[in-house]
Length: 189
Image 1 (tube, rainbow, N blue to C red):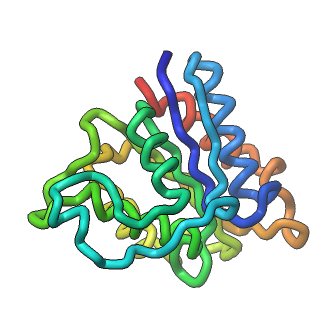
Image 2: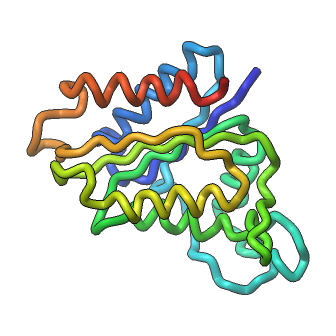
Image 3: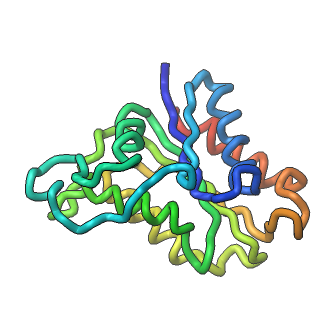
């Protein structure tokens, strides 16, 4: 059975990002894909210590012992991933950025990818600003950095003009819900 990992970088377990990730999960499950969802905010992940242990030992492992080891294992075992994060201050959340920094063992010093080949990744981004173009460059850069690991970037979406409790809920925005479902449905094909 195929496996997918959903990584949610929002601190809100019932916010717009989590709702869209759940819709993607529905799309995955309808394709017979086993899924596991991880909320980064629940984990204890330290920042990269720039110790270069992974580089000196030429391994795809990290010397820092924390919850990232479990997450690295899940990433290696899955066939595809969906990374979902709100955009805060023109970039992904601090939780998501810490996760990104800890992918350093999956990039060689010559920028060669070290992630097991064939894994796909898609992204779900949310923001409260109505202009979808506002943070286009940092979002594109984030996806590009993930691609350096060897993960194959499949798709992404940005759901904008959202703010839980203040603006209409994402569940009322049919286009966003359908797009998130499709991202899940099409991830592992």
